[in-house]
Amino acid sequence: MCGIVGYVGSATPSTRPLDVALEGLGRLEYRGYDSAGVALVAPGVDTVHSAKKAGKLVNLRNELEASPLPHATASIGHTRWATHGAPSDVNAHPHLALGGKLAVIHNGIIENFFSLRHELLDMGVEFVSETDTEVAAHLIAQQYEITGDLTAAMRAVAQRLEGTFTLLAVHADAPDTVVGARHDSPLVVGLGDGENFLGSDVAAFIAHTREALELGQDQIATITPNAVVVTDFDGQVVQPKHFTVDWDASAAEKGGFWSFMAKEIADQPQAVADTLLGRTNESGDLILDDARIDESVLRSIDKIIVVACGTAAYAGHVAKYAIEHWCRIPVEIELAHEFRYRDPIVSARTLVVAMSQSGETMDTLMAVRHAQEQGAKVISIVNTHGSTIPRESDAVIYTHAGPEVAVASTKAFVSQITAAYLLGLYFAQLRGNMFRDEIHTVLEELRAMPQKIQEVLDRGERVREIARWMVDTSSVLFLGRHVGYPIALEGALKLKEIAYIHAEGFAAGELKHGPIALIEPGQPVFVIVPSPRGRNSLHSKVISNIQEIRARGARTLVIAEDGDEAVTPFADEVFWVPQCPTLLSPLLTIVPLQIFAAELARAKGLDVDQPRNLAKSVTVE
Ligand code: F6R
Image (spheres, helix red, strand yellow):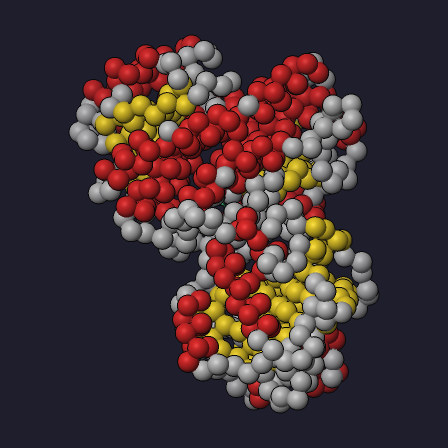
């Protein structure tokens, strides 16, 4: 979704404000966008200078090369993901008002824009675009005319807007100031030396500083080169929380890989290892991050509901198997966007676990708020520091996957699963469901997983060969059982998202209840086989499933544990993974499916990092 950068610094006008804005927008490209623009202000210049272009950032860069903008002291930059009005030059941000003295950029949707637009039209205001943002620009302009102060103008308008928004504004008369406001949409402050930054996430300014401030809901940040003042929508000064970003700019670069997705798949051993780091106190007991929840409350819970969307929901599905097994607490999985519309049964003894890579997914955030309104406590599992979901939760487990740039989630998924295991073990410890040494044994097994993931990666070439060979495939099915079931769903999602191939994941036991009708000669089917060392009946049932589809002509692509020779007679191809406890196996079995999807999309010549129609961070409902 839209990316936002703000910068103020250079004491004397220079190219730095534009450079920072363009560099930041480049790092935010992963969020998905369809047009881009910048606005600059400088002392003694009457109007804002701006440029905007539909399409990729390169179009804006070309425009700026053909018609350079003058040096400046502050800048705002925007990548737009169209909501109101088509992706065109004119609808791209920034939007100008006051005869070009004021420029505004916006992320989110202003829900009462229609009535506000009519109010402005009745006053004779002329609009040039179809966007809701231009309404905000004219309203801020009117307030600026009254107050002569950009922060006061922003505050007055923020109070009138309904919906979700991050708004940034600059005014030609205040060339040392950028003002940003947020309501249900992300905005963080970056702290520099004689310069300050705003961004929709820290990637916007990570090349310049790792020191940052979290902004709360309904707050306004006014940045100047040497100060940051944060106020609420009533004008009260608030103290934002300072944090240091635990990754640097190089973590957000491709590092020699052909795509961010390929790099992030390869990063998975590190992501899991980092997520496991620093989880115990001096006594060796597991702890939560940012816990604002009493242990006695956690001891009393009688149900867990995991709320999440897409890949994160599949990670939640894996969590169900582990948490129920270790803690004997019933766990439900709910797609966050369905949760609050079905009148869920939630009480003070329900714990809601919100899983989100971005920490900004609006559907998940709304589910969190709904759960809290019903009296439930919320623990979130989130990758992005400074984001909204962890700030509003009662406790957090941060995954330490580092920045995930590719739209299709990979390393965040395995980190979410890892964090969910930690949560399950934490509950088992707290509620006494497992002995201390049993918990430590599982932790040791978990610590062995990064090396095993690396082994699966090292065996990836055969998966890539098969993917290239299947470049013209029009449909692929995925079957799994137990923890293999959510992996089948995630494998199918990856293929849909980036290779645009029809793909379906099924619980293998469901086959005979309908999906087997899809099997015809040559139909490729991935089957995730559970370990024969686990519950043997489960293993043999999946082997029977493979036989059933093979008998009907399916081409069987089997993911099985090293040494499981029972699969070979029925497999056209086997992708072997190292042995590990069944509950932890999703960390391994997903890897060949990620590699397969990425390579097949690459063979089709598709942009795997920015698949069509998708945005990285879905900040609208
Ligand atoms: C798929 C994918 C999405 C996200 C979903 C939730 O590859 O990335 O399905 O998992 O949009 O996003 P977060 O985790 O940011 O809440």
